[in-house]
Length: 543
Image 1 (cartoon, rainbow, N blue to C red):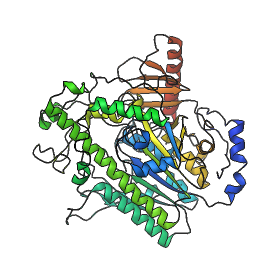
Image 2 (image 1 turned 180 degrees about the horizontal axis):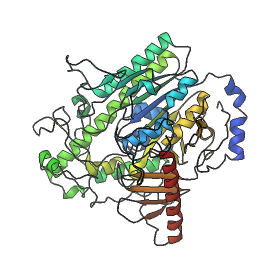
Image 3 (image 1 turned 180 degrees about the vertical axis):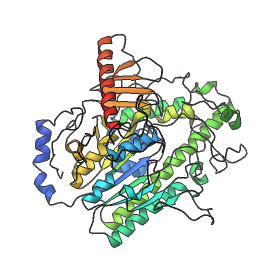
Image 4 (image 1 turned 120 degrees about the horizontal axis):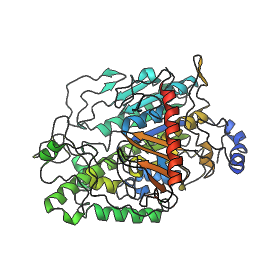
């Protein structure tokens, strides 16, 4: 292993220091690292990917490229996001909780989702800091962060604003300018176009800027709804899911236990929990095959079973295609001779989605499922399977909504091959990790005011030895759903519901609510949740 010297300086909210052993492991190899070129960074973010959709996390979908990265690097079993797309992207690119940077609502202070709130001036994005230490930065795919892309530190960008039709580039922007309209789009598919742009950026970098390190941020829209996929990709999975979500969940759970990274009981289906937003008119448009509850598979009609299995087949096809396109990007790194010293990080912005809606051009029931004229969403049945073995879905802050696969691959800097890391980590950790490796840092001041301290923590020591870093706490809030994790204790509540308490060391899947048995622990964690909300509010108020 090639080590990195840890810079100390504990972040906001009192993260615990490194163990003596971990510090020794890192520090004793620092001299070798000083002679190694700084790494490049490839950050890949999927959209609405389930915790178990990858083969290396127990899924049956063909994902050989990502599985190879896992086999040659690290997999984290307790990595977290924010439960939703725009808060996760803000957290990933700034190192702060979304509420700190006004990118998600905080009661009593404001904020908002989508592009309806603007970051304060002190909340710069990662590429702005990397640029200061000599990096070039490229963005390909979904943005969903406030402001334009290039002023945020990127040198090139493909902004996939069209998120309602995977077969059209209409509305997208290149380098913050609208793409030309018209032309033949018969061969267009958004996932391929995203990879094409990333590869073009990398080729240009090799030709014109090979003397500088780079950060390439690839934000796929897949497998977010609408479920759109190439016919040949759908065909590979057409009948695969007729066995139903019950059996898919049990098979994925069995493989997860065999893989060794997740040892937890399978959470039961919650047939009373449907989509987070109810659109009755969408159910009518989608027809009798649609169902908005995860009922036992055998209780569905044959028409419903085929409709649901087809939706999951399209979801799988989208994940499969994303993996293939990632393979092309990785091959470009190999062609450039930089693959070994490029840190590749793969994650998802939230768990799989239980949403059911019809947007954009609507849904034509006569159109082939997965085609441009169709508009389908995964729904709570197969979303539960995609999030195996965890509970609930995107938007909730139970484990199914906030857990992401996290793969880290860096042959020149990580000696481990195929190891799991059980340490709880979060997307806010990406910025401090990358800045440590790049030789940058978050500033201590913004103008005359202290810069808010990031809740993120550098994961560099964790690359060397498992258990080397620890968060004192992790905190969530989204649309009234709230949670806090301290050690293995997690306090969580859906909007309008009372607090639930779980010991994640024995119950990662949140099957046994201990709130009645440990009322003092509930009060303790509730107080901590509120204290952190108030501290976040102070950051929110800084201009």
